[in-house]
Amino acid sequence: MKEKLHALILGAMCFLLTILICIQVKTVSKNGTTVSANQEESELKSQVLKMKEKYENQYTELEKLEKELEKTRKNITSHNEELKSLEEQINVDNKILGMTDVKGKGVVITVQDGTANATTLNASDLIVHDLNVLSIVNELKNAGAEAISINGKRVVNTTAISCDGNVIVVNGEKISSPIEISAIGLPEQLSTLNRAGGTLERFSDLGKKVGLTKNQKIEIPRYTGVFNFKYAKTIK
Image 1 (cartoon, one colour):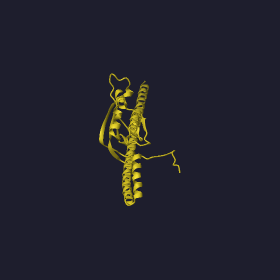
Image 2 (spheres, one colour):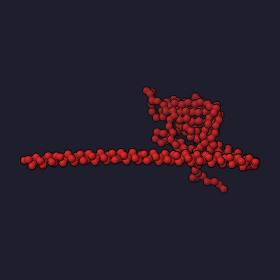
Image 3 (cartoon, rainbow, N blue to C red):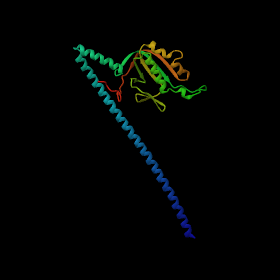
Image 4 (cartoon, rainbow, N blue to C red):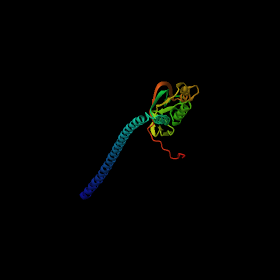
């Protein structure tokens, strides 16, 4: 009888020990997974910071070389009227392409997501979408804007304004509400977007927060991306 009792006790202890070992293994495995995930996240952050530092260093070096090139071009063209004329044409072309920082008078338009309330019928109407930004940019171009930026991103001929989840993408970079669109041109002409029944009023009626101010000193940065032409070929 005692032997059976000892066997039952021993069996129970073995069963309990097995359960404890399983719990311990799962705990160690879970902790190991957490440590591994944290380590991967840390390594990813480190790589991003290194890439950012590398980009900033290369951009600084590029700016330095461009200044040296500009200085050399001025020295070469200063005593040659033909070359001076070509230099002026290059400067004009760079302005058109958006490759130079520019300043001047114009307007600043702000568009921001609205806040839901009891009268809101469609929550999507409150959100600033990529098509909303695109419509504003197109109207500014039609109104004679000579340079446009969206949250500091220069708008050029190849600029794509698209949607990625809940954020808007401009020139491959994500931006979020509030959206600030700066445009250089004749303020009185550009401000027609704020007319009765116009684009900004429609956005406001839907619940978005909008605003337009005239500004005599607007600065718009140059485009820092790269122009890639995959399909257009030069006719020789």
